[in-house]
Length: 113
Length: 117
Image (cartoon, rainbow over all chains, first blue to last red):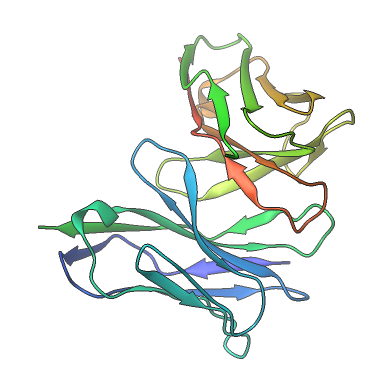
């Protein structure tokens, strides 16, 4: 079945450091790929998405490129801030009629001043 | 736009009682709503897919008689945890989609924390 694997956390960084969170997937067909962010005590918010191969999603300084050849969708940000501390989830949307989301395990990111 | 609310945001109940959680789409009509469960420091697990006016579709391993889902209108879905036990304690999250096909984006509610004592 479809699955998403992302790097384990927590990832601890200093402010202004470069962030990468690896995400790979297994899926039949051509799923859409997403990154969601969950701040402490809150629900999930869509951070960015890509719907086809070689698409690059970007938002708030974060970027991720849909790589079909490596089945990856790694999240990157060039200079993190303390406010980026959160849990980040990689997800794929299945190609069935309901478009269910399959989530990775989540990666906690802690940015220190 | 596309705001989803949940009520209550947290609830404590005694073992053996039932608890109802509401999920509302505030500014759009949601043909499909999803219910997830999230354990501490873990990912979201899809419990069921709920379509307005029809029975919910449960994921494998989810007890439909224990987790009753009702999608009575295009803006409201409810999850009732029946005869709750401490192992049902978790963070329950709903999401809603604007359309009725797989290409529609899901908008998430803020979640409901259930503690069963």
